[in-house]
Amino acid sequence: MSTVAYFDCFSGVAGDMTLGALIDAGVPLDEIEAGLAKLPIEPFELEVTRVERLGISAIGVRVRAADTGVLRTYAAVRALIEQAELAERPKELALTIFRRLAEAEAKVHGKEVSRVAFHELGSVDTLVDIVGASIALDLLGIEEVHASAVATGMGMIRTDHGIYPVPWSAVVELLKGAPMYSRGIPTELVTPTGAAILAATARSFGDMPQIRVKTVGYGAGTRELEIPNVLRVIVGEMVADEQFGPVPAVVLESNIDDMNPELYEYVLERLFSVGAQDVWTTPIVMKKGRPAVTLSILCGPAEEQAVREVLFSETTTLGLRRRAVEKWMLPREVITVQVEGGTVRVKVARAFGGRVTGASPEYADCVRVAREAQRPLKDVYAEAAAAARALLTD
Image (cartoon, rainbow, N blue to C red; front, side, top):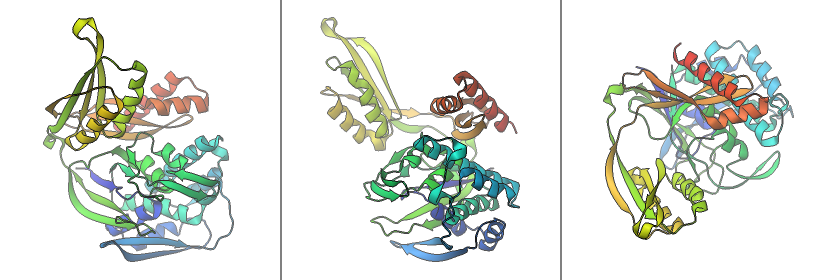
C-alpha cells in the first residue's frame, strides 16, 4: 500500500506551516537540518518550538537570518538547489516547487520565467521552507499527497509589489483547478510558498481519501485567528481501491422556459462555486409548444441547501424536483508533468484494481503552455498525455 499525506487546509497553508506539520508528524529535526546545511546560502538558524493555537498543540517554525538584501532570480535559485548535495528525490521536488512559483509569478507579471525576480520568495526562509518540506516528505516516504479544499482568507495584503487582494494573484494562478473558499477571515491564509507546495505535490483536492492513519502533524501559522491557525497533515496508508463504494448524492432539477439563455453561463459558474459536482441542461418542449430547458444539478447532501439558494436567486424558476441517488466514482488523482515550455496537470482515473483507465491533460494548462511557448496546442496536449503515461508506467 502506498504511503500518503493528506493536507487539511481548513486554515490555509504556508511554507512554515507545512514544515512544522511534517516535523510534528514524525520527521527527525536533525535529519532536516543536516539536509538544509548542504544549501550554499547565507547563515541561518532554524527555530522550532511547540505552540498552541486555540487549544491545538502545533509546531511553529521560524527561520532566523540576517537581511542581506540579496535579490534572487528563479535561475539563481535553481542553480543554488542544483549545486546542493541533496538526495535526488527531495532535490527534484524542491526544483519543481520553485518552477511552479516562477511560472505563476511570470504569468502574473507578464515576464519570461527565466527573468522572474523572486523578491521575498527568494529569501532564506522561503528556501528553507521549500527545501525542508521536500526533505521531510522524502523522509516520511510519502508517495502521494492529497489535499482538502483550500481556505484562502480575504481582504488586502502588502507585498514588495504593492497592496494586492487576498488571495494574491500568484496563489490563484498556482491553485487553478483546486477548490478554494475565503472562510470570511479578513487576512491572508495561503502564501505563494504554501500554494506552490500544493501545486507541485497534490494529486487531488477534495474529501480525504480512505486512509489508514499512522501519524498526524500540526504546523502553526503566525497569527491568532478566530479558528485554530494550523495546517493539519494526516499521514497513513491508502486503503485498497476495492473498499471504495457508492457515495450518496442528490439531483436537483427545474424546467425553465422564461429565462434569457445568456444567463446560463453565469448560473453554472455560481452553482459550481458552491459545490455542485456536475451541472447540465437539456432542451425540452413544454405545454403549448413552448421551448424550455431542464436544468439539472448533481451535488452532495452537504451542498444541497447552497445549490437550492443559487437556483432560486439566480434563475427564474419557482420550484424544483429532488431525488436521492448513489454515485460511483473511479478513484482519481491529479499529477503534474513537465513538457517543453512549462508544466501541465493531468487528471488520472483508475479502475478499482488500480489499473489506469484514463489520463486527461488539463485544457487550461495546455493552453497556457501553448501560448507562452508559442507551440501548437495539439502538440502540448499530446506531449503531456505521453509524459503522464510514461510516469504512470514507471
